[in-house]
Length: 224
Image (tube, rainbow, N blue to C red):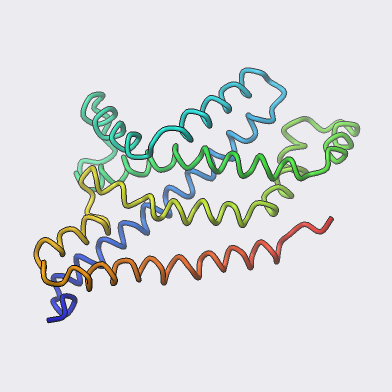
């Protein structure tokens, strides 16, 4: 019997992947914003900002994502009482977004910083020579070129983020890994079918996404 011919099982499957898409979309936006700010701090002339950016990257890049997600749930929610929504499922979703965002931002920061390093130093020096501030130089000269140089690395980071989003299931969100577990528990004779459907869905979505980022990176590459 085909497991997914049952409408209830199809709903579980679709709902799980919808949560993954929502987690990926929201976390990507927040991670990009935070990561860009951290990259600016890491190249800032202000020592305190550089130290903060470096500490963030070193701490979160070397901390397992599972621990961060657990801290968001047991630390922020259970201990400190932080609540993003009265709806338990939505609250777990936003706790997952927080954990994924702060973790992924560390990798986004390093990708953008590597892009900043590809911009010739003479351009920043010329900008300062005509009286532009550090902020103006960064936002108007450096970051636009750095952003075009790191499209492919950022694509890899966001693809990894979509797969990391399954960890949010550990705090009770009914995303794809939890959906897969529930379907296997209720359909133990169809383990391989369920696995290949879930794995195939990730592959069908993420492989073209990777090629898309690669195409965009070539299309927008800065010619030097």
